Length: 460
Ligand code: ADP
Ligand code: ASP
Ligand code: MG
Image (cartoon, rainbow, N blue to C red; front, side, top):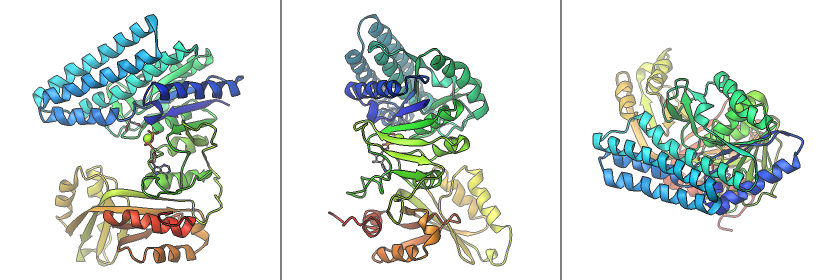
C-alpha cells in the first residue's frame, strides 16, 4: 500500500514528537516493505504559524524590533530542536540552512516594518517559513536515524493560483511536478519529506493554502501521486462526535463517508481542513485520521461509503465567531433576479457564505470572513436594508440518518428548547441541519445535543 502521511503541528512540536514521527513512518514502511516508501508531509511546529502571523501584524504596525525579535526566537527554537536530533556535519549543514533562511526573512521583515506594509504576497512568504523549517529538520532527523529521506521544497511541486493566503491548486501542473520530483524519489527508495500548507504560482511566487492547509496539501499530493491512502496524523484519536474543547466526553467515529467528513470539516471540525476531502473524492482515495501519540489506535477511516457508528447521528460540529447578515427588501417579493444580485456582491468581495435562510422579503446569511464586510454592506445597501449581528455561531448536526428519520429534526430542536435559535436550515442533501445562535450559547447547545444523540450526560 502506497501512502502519504501528514503530521500536524503538535505531532512535530519538539524533538520528542519528531522522534515519534520517525518511528511511525518506519513502522508504516516496514509493514508495507514491498511498496514504495511513504511520502511525508509536515506542518510547521506548533504555534509557529501563529507567531509568524503575529510578526506580520507587528511589521504592519512598524513595530520593527518586536517583529524581528519573534524571528530571532523562532530561529533559536528550531536550532535547538535540530541540535537534539541531528549531529556532526549534517547538523552543521542544517544549522547553516536554517540560519540563512531565517536571516533572509529577518531582512524582509525589517523592510516591511520600515514601510509599515505587509502585502498579501509578503504575508505568505512569512508564513511559509514554518513549514520550510520544520520539514528540513524532519528530513535531516530521518537521515540521522538511518532512513533514506530527501527534503523536497513543496513550492517546486504544488502549483497554485496567486490568491495569497487562500491559494487553489492547479492539479494538472502539480501532478506533473509531483511525478517528476516526488515519485522519482520514492521510486529510488527515498522517503520524500515536504512541508504542507505552502506552494507557489507557476512563475515561482510563494503562496499558502490558508490556515490548517497542510491537510489539504497532503490530499493534493496524495491524489497527484495516486496513493492508496492519505493519512492525517494529529493529536486526537480521529474524528470525534464533537470538538473535545467544547464537549467534554466525545467519542471516536470509526468510519465516515466523504460527504459527512466534508460537512463536519466545513462546519468547524478543525481536525480536517475543509478542502481535504476534495482531492480524495476525485480519486476515491480513503483518508484516515490517526493519533501520533497513540499510533496503535485505529482512528477514523473516511471513504466514499462510510458506515454508521452505531449512533443515530454521526457527529456534531460548531463554527464560532460568525456574523449574521440580514438583507431585507420589499422588492424581493415576487421578483426574480434579486438573489443573483445579492450573491454577486459576496462573489465580488470573495466572501463565502455558510448558511442561508430566506423569507418572502428577507434573506439571512452567515459569513465567517469579515475582511470585506464593510464593502459588502455598502454594496448591498444599494438595493436593500442591511443589518448585521456579530458574535454568532453555527452548530451543525451531521448524519446520513437525517435523510430517513424525520423525527431527528424534532429531537434536535427539542433538545435546544432553552437556546434562542436565530436561523435554522436543513441542507438539500438532508445530511445535516444547521442552527445559528449566539456564540455565548454554543457550549450549552453542543452539550445538550451531544447528550441527546450520543447519550453522554452533560458534565459527566
Ligand atoms: P493538527 O495540528 O494536527 O493539524 P489541528 O489542531 O488542526 O491539528 O486539529 C486537531 C484538533 O481539532 C483537535 O485537537 C481538536 O481540538 C479539534 N477538533 C475540533 N473538532 C473535532 C472533532 N470533531 N474531532 C476531533 N477533533 C476535533
Ligand atoms: N501551519 C499552518 C497553520 O498553522 C498549516 C497547518 O498546520 O495545517 O495553519
Ligand atoms: Mg490542522
